[in-house]
Each structure stands twice: as C-alpha cells, then as structure tokens.
Image 1: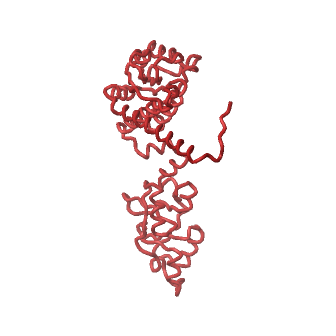
Image 2 (image 1 turned 90 degrees about the vertical axis):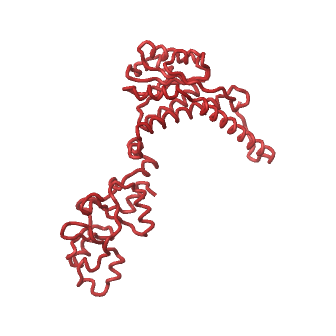
Length: 332
C-alpha cells in the first residue's frame, strides 16, 4: 500500500526528518572511517591483480550490490581501466562466456553467501580467472574462494534495524572509488585521457581543447602588414569575425585589427596600411590549451576572438577561436 504524506508538515516533524537525515549520514560516515582504517595488504593485492590482467575487470553482484557494481564498472571504464558489469543471473544463462581467462573478476556481496553468485564464482575457479571478493564475512563462501579477499568492516546499517543495505552499500561504493583512483594514479591518468572517455556533456565540454573548436585554413582572416586598409576591410567583412590578423613577411602574427582600431583611426583610414592601424602583439592562445581557459581570457579582456599560435612554432597563426563557438560547445 503506498505511503502518503501531507504537503504541510508540522515543524516538529520537519525537525525529526532532519534529525533522521543527520543520524543516517553520521552512521554511514563512521562506516567509511572504519573502512579506511581496515584497508591493508588485500587492497594492494587487488590493485596488483587488476594491473596484471590483460583483459577487463568483470564486476558482478546481486541486488543492491549489483547496482553498486554497475557504478564501479562505469567508474573504472571511464578512468582508464577496461571494465564491464555482468549480472550474475544472466551469467548463469550464457553470459559467463563474457568472462575470459585474461580478465579479473571483482565480485561483491555483503554476506558473501548470495546464491546467484555461485555459478560465476565456480566459473572463475574452473578457468583460473583471478577473483577479488568483497564481503563482510571472512568465513563466507565468496571470500574463501577468492584469490584476494577484501573484508568490509562490521558497521551499523543506517536504517536502525539492520535490514536495509545502507552503510554496507556506501562502503562498497567508496571501496570501488578507492580502487579506481588508485589505478588512475598508478597509470598517470590525465584530464586529456578523461576527455577521451567523456566526449559529451558538461565534463566533455570543460575538457575541450582550443584546437577542437578553432577555425583554420581559408576561414582565417589574415592580411599582410603592407595591405591597404581598403583590402583589409574587405577581408575583415568577408570572413565575418569582426577582426583580422596582420602577419609580417615571414608569416608571423604581429598584430590584430578590430572594430575598435577602425574607430580610433577613422580619419584617413582608407589611406592607411594594416600595419598603421593594427594593435601590436595581440593576446593569443595555444592550440593545446583548454577551451575554458581561452573563454576566461576573452571575458577578462572583453574580447570575442583569440588567434591561436603554437608556442613552439615560429609564431604563425594556426587558427582563430571565437567565443560563440565555445558557448555553442557548452564551454562557459
């Protein structure tokens, strides 16, 4: 029967709700502290086992442990450790074929006696697939069968009755994060690697490089220093960025002309050359810079474009980054 509640709760009830929330969080925090204190050689052995594997980390668990396992597998996969979640019930009906001798299994169960895990445990033993078990009972079937056994410390479930997986699942989730981060640090996983696995969404946008968004080739508005302003205005209008870069005879970017420069040199403008109107030594950005950094520069300078010049090259413009391109890509 569904539980209903009133939209307007007495203040006493609101205080009880807050007290419950704080109690739950405090109980789970104590569980996490106990987990941190309990970690030892078995954690290091688990990391070594994963690093030696030629295949993937196969994560499995039933019920709430399964939900946590899916998240752990996703975190591992997105941080440079190939991983896949295999549901233990589906494993018993053909998905065991996904678990190969080059893999390492990470099996989760609070009790360590979950019946649905028996087939995947037996499969790892039959084919000598390394097995990392995570459970709260050292004497459980799962941990006794494991090559590496990580024992979750005994901790109070936050439900108050010891029947709803709360603290135990929080500890398992944190353990998975600890494994993923330890592997990340060992592999020197960088933001550039992270972007490879997160090309979409806000995370992908934050890690976009200038080179991913810049305009190149014929799209670049460029003129030489000696170019008459009549021709410079044509180039400026034709490319549509509201700016034009000025290069010397060696092709190096030596200046930029903006609408502001045009207004400052309005008198006799058409009789001048690009070099006479330009602002020298404009602010530029490197192609491998994070686009978010370029946006910060444009906002600070109150400009809309940045020419892209490689710091290792001879100063030739490689591209042009417009703030609208950054905003369209979600870089804000």
